[in-house]
Amino acid sequence: MDAQHDGPPWRWARGEPGTGPGAEGDGGGGGRAGGRGGIAGLPWRSTLLITAFVLIGSGFAARNQPDRVALDALGRGLLVFGGALLLLRHRFPVPVVFAAAAVTLGYLAAGYAYGPVFAVVAVACFAAVVHGHRHAAWWALGLLWTGHLLLAHWLYRFLPPDGDGPAPWGQELPVAAFAVAILAASELVRTRREQWAKERAERAAAERRRADEERLRIARELHDVLAHSLSVINVQAGVGLALLDADPAQARTALTTIKAASKEALGEVRQVLDTLRTPGDAPRAPAPGLDRLPELAEQAAAAGLTVRTETEGEPRRLPPGTELAAFRIVQEALTNIVRHSGSRTARVVVGYRPDALDLRIDDEGPATGGDAGGSGNGLAGMRERAAGLGGTIEAGTRADGGFRVRARLPLHPEESP
Image (cartoon, rainbow, N blue to C red; front, side):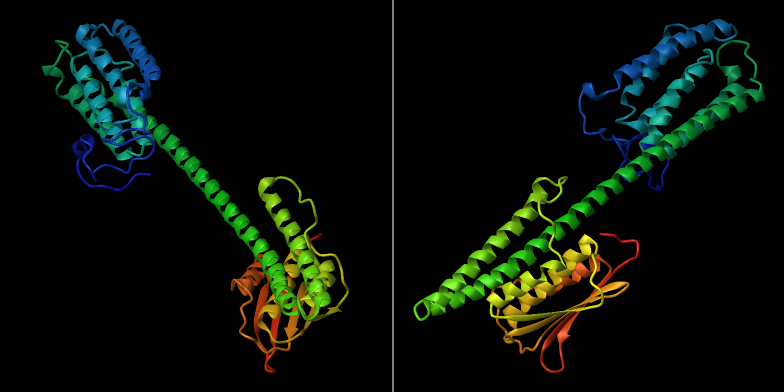
């Protein structure tokens, strides 16, 4: 992609800052290409092949054009010099394209035969365009064509070979077509390279988005698992400490609850971490769903919270993603009640609608202002889960002082578990 610029082409050829188009790939008018230094990074083989082709082809062309000056040491030197310029076409494309045009004009001004000498300019222009210096290539070809017009139609009488006449104007059409073909091919390659670069950038951005989404998913899973289990453990640890001397049997029950909650949390954390170690494998255990609501009620009961669950509509299997999101939303809502509410009862209503799954979790309140080790990300995590499925979360204080969480997760007829 080239930037618009001002200034004459000879400023680009010197590689002055801010005067050439925006260089891409491996180098601009005064820089190095691709970060490779030394002669090892130069295109030796292609340059040798092009130079050999130009030398051999020009020799045959000189034999077939006896009216032109025979190819001598000077002519061969110009051809070799022009070919040698191509060694730097990737590092200094702008100076090379103008130098190649100048060498070609000098070759023609000396009266040597027309022929493969134009291949040097073609390759130099191609390199300039694909590296983002399209305007420099256009200027170089334009100057070459203008110089050829002057040589062939006005300056021929002052230049070798002796007795040479003006060239027919008809030959300018092939020369112009040659220049247009070079530019068209170069622009086509440049456009394709830009498309490939854009596609690579889009793929890289998509991969980064997927990685970010996966990190967010894992963070949500770990938060929900740990927040719920640690809240139960925190409450039971307080109960155990308080009753350790007065009621050892009840303290033992609290410790048993802590053991069970920690074991379950470790199992779920291990399942989440397994997806990091072997991302291509299926999870060893199914993701939790609404069928595990009784377990949540038991865990909440161990923390001193009585949970009543109700079902509206006909229960049915849901997509795994919806099942998991619904389970985590109810889990987080009950965890928040244990942490922050003075109520010892909660009500969970699961509504199966034709086009959505409705969840409602209520507690009688009031809020205690307690912390219990929470991170403050519970409601945000619930909203992220619902939004990931195109659903919504509403949470707020009821008129009677209680607290309500409402979630709606849309279902689509084509979804299947």
